[in-house]
Image (cartoon, rainbow, N blue to C red):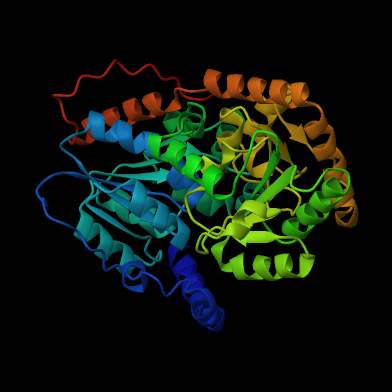
Length: 454
């Protein structure tokens, strides 16, 4: 089965090569970090020190890993850290966030000879995988070398679960190579257990993302700089549309135009942050055609910034700081059927948060917020009617300051009560390394109190 998987992966790469080439020319995708994707990983000095390999997929996982990396550096001061990401944007965030890492590189293609090359270079004491990156050859090669693998903050969406069921027997073999899976929720744990994850290696400790939502001093300074540049004032209503996909930007712009029709000029302003950088130019064209005044974050500062109706946030890693400025935040990928994106960053800051109906990638978080009326979810309507529904919801929220502030306060409370998964996860990693003979005995930790999910 592994041979068939490797053959299909190779065939898929060959078939998609023309698409990769087009994307590389247009947006620099895939070609960036090609040597690393083929296993040529740069590794800095101190090779004699033990190393932990942490893999994050993109921006969301990398941001979520920040408190974990901080805790790991405190609990394992003798270990070095290697961080891999799959996407260019994830790589950019990791480069800024983890400056003390021994190496930050692009995740290798999951072919045996490439994986072996990376493991030979890194010689990790453990491999830590954020969320749901289940790469069969990597897991098998780690198992062959007795390298423990931990799935951290794991989640299995309903859609992914249905797809995995088609290859359940293979998944059982793949999951057998994971030392421990720490899942976000009972539903995630039940799905991975049904796919074949051994129950005695399965834990549920909550969502690490609840621990990674506090603002840094740099975030606060950035927010103030943004407020000054664009002349955002207390008498204006600021809407942030975050992590948007096609056609959500046009829906948001149409909804925003409806709000402007009922309000005075410049009393309501919109900040749009598309999910994928390669779409920045596309959204800029939409804004040019809209007839509205707009500015882009990446452009040189000008007087026009102070009067822009819409601001295009075409930057990486600044969204967390911009949420501070928002009266209402819409989190995208939820009108378009992309499964939604992380609502915790605005929610934890007490911002009234709105999503579309499609949040299946964040079911547990969404349920926790909705159960306490700590978030607003738009109803499912035909896409042509989405702008009207959004405009109506936003108008109601902007006209009722008390309501939106109460929603935001309840959201902050939900986030505060759900913190603590990072500390539990670090305890598991400590015992995993201790079992493999790589733990730092000088670092005191409380006795592990974890119960396997039944």
